[in-house]
Length: 147
Image (cartoon, rainbow, N blue to C red; front, side, top):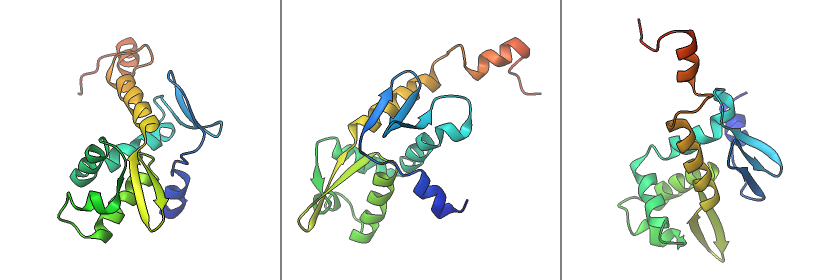
C-alpha cells in the first residue's frame, strides 16, 4: 500500500463516532483503533500523536481550546503564511483532532472533543499498569532488563 492510500485509510471521518471506553473507538460501527499490543490496531492514535509532535500544531490545539475560530483569527497568533497554516490545519483535521466547518468563504476550526477524550482514555491505558500490559508478560517469562 502506498503512502497516499495509507493516509486515506487512516483519515478519521468525524460522523457517527462511538467509543467503548474500555477498548476501542468506532466510526460508523466499524472499529478504527483498538487498544492492544498490536501496533497496526493503534495506528490512528499514532497519527494523532505524530500531529501533536509539532510545536505549531500544539499551539493551534491550545488556541482552539477557547472555542471555534476562523483561519484568519488563528493566523494572527502566528508568524507564518496562510499556506503554512493550511498545511498544519490539514494534518490536524485529517487525524481527527480538529473539526472544520465552511461558513461562506471562511473556514472555522474547533477541537474535536470526542477524539481528544478518546486520546485521553488511550493515554491513561498505556501509561498505567494493567493485566494485559507488556511488563506483566515479561514478569511471567523473565526479566525486563536488557542484556
